[in-house]
Image 1 (cartoon, helix red, strand yellow):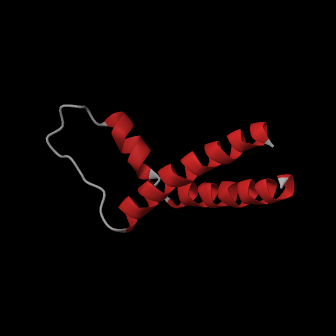
Image 2 (spheres, one colour):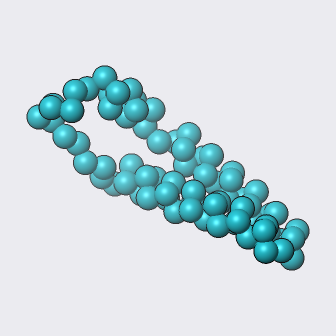
Length: 72
């Protein structure tokens, strides 16, 4: 059982790294340099939104997989 959990955690961590690295790299820079009073606000659409949601889901699954080692 512990081996299965380790494999699951490795797969989730690799997928999480891929989704983070594939995301738009300029987004963080623009958010840091743009003022909060900027009239231009962008929404995530298409693949960017899918990657954003996949990153959140994979991060939650990674935490749950990590916590599952407590009970094994």
